[in-house]
Image (cartoon, rainbow over all chains, first blue to last red):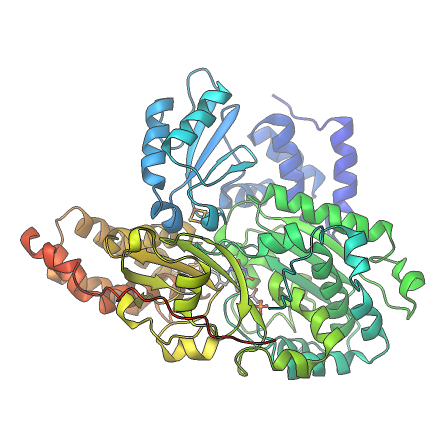
Length: 157
Length: 440
Ligand SMILES: Cc1cc2nc3c(=O)[nH]c(=O)nc-3n(C[C@H](O)[C@H](O)[C@H](O)COP(=O)(O)O)c2cc1C
Ligand code: SF4
Ligand code: FES
């Protein structure tokens, strides 16, 4: 399906382009805007981003695949990210991670059948002082334990 | 104790509070001096980078060419993705205007007209804080063309926030520049160095968020004052992020050279359940781990930590109690570097994978003594053979964890009965040191 930016997003892109001396440099913010509009980065999205940023499609693909935060497949309405790196692990992150898998009945990288939840085991999120933590979409939830994590999941259902 | 980077002033993140407390007076003062004098003062202050390598900030600035027609750039590194590091986000949240003022002074000193603040993508909330602060500063005429009217002096510069998208390697300075340029962010081969050939081939300086936030205080109170704080060879305060097995994890701003045991036992409240400490990683996950029985007297500054067999890194202190499974910890650390390797160099790409396989094998109880030796040898073969320092970052924890806790690893690959022994060694006597008074 062809992808076109909304009028509003085209204006956002105009602002973003002004920050850099070259259009190509805006590819990351433009991808974010596209992902917000489309939910994920499809081939069609990359084609349009390549056009806007005046760069080859392969290079856009090279950028998209390098980072963890551009999704090439649809994710759930609530994207649950559980940090299991050392500082979180020392304070029980794997118990939380296992419980979340249990509760949602999905594994790392999967989406629930109703498309409500997706799960990702993530690297250190910079919340080691308030570990363990999870992120739901863009929001951090910190100082967790198994029961407070379940409460968060319940509140989203 | 007076704090420089995170002062205990309520609402310091609000422009009015910042101004009421002398905000932007350092930039005004800087404008009355030559750029070279500013560089000289920062050099003499002894300010060293807080992003990992502890390189002299003033010296780095002095590498920027003075006579060039090319545009010059400043990149402020807020990628903050090294496990155990969570300090720069405190600056974004609680002291954004001091960072902005530091940027203005730095740009004036090195002659940069544009600054990009690179913030990791996961920090959505802190990206917004920083964008808001930059917007406010523009509105007030503290950034951009209007600076010329507000401050006089004819100099102005622009500040933009660039949001990352989840890649630890983008904290490496040349990868960071490729990321901003919209390329696949592989680290670049050095030389040429950024001061000659940085963003879009132009002279560029890259500094950590905390480094730049120190600058206004140095200009305002003088380099002599700054140089007198903490350890003379690495002066100033440092943001120490304490995590893991402590009662009060968090960020503590303390003079450099503060005893590691003071930070753990007094500021961070000691270890839960009064347990002993088996291991401490003092500067973020890539720095060599220290044994719990060798923490006494270790001071937290670049030189002292080097003498103690580790490094200051990002000041992220990870504390592990006597019951911690270090094989599991090392496997988790190695998984991280394996995941984050950009794949450009064979030793790093393949080596991190091999180390992870070996560690997982040992974890499953299927390892042999030879595997332990192999681990160290793979680590040694990565070190020094790669384009960027992620190679070392992956090799160091393996090499030093295994050699410093060899009995723990060996017991793991022998009969399980032998494992009992392991938890008894390495542990430090539980002490509560009196906090040594350091006046600044
Ligand atoms: C793999 C890797 C990751 C890094 N990540 C960061 C980071 O997140 N933040 C940072 O300030 N420096 C990071 N650095 C260090 C930078 O390359 C650079 O030295 C630093 O930003 C310079 O600033 P400073 O001199 O003020 O410390 C990293 C280095 C490597 C090799
Ligand atoms: S050392 Fe690793 S991360 Fe650095 S350039 Fe080589 S492969 Fe990439
Ligand atoms: S280890 Fe989980 S946030 Fe740092």
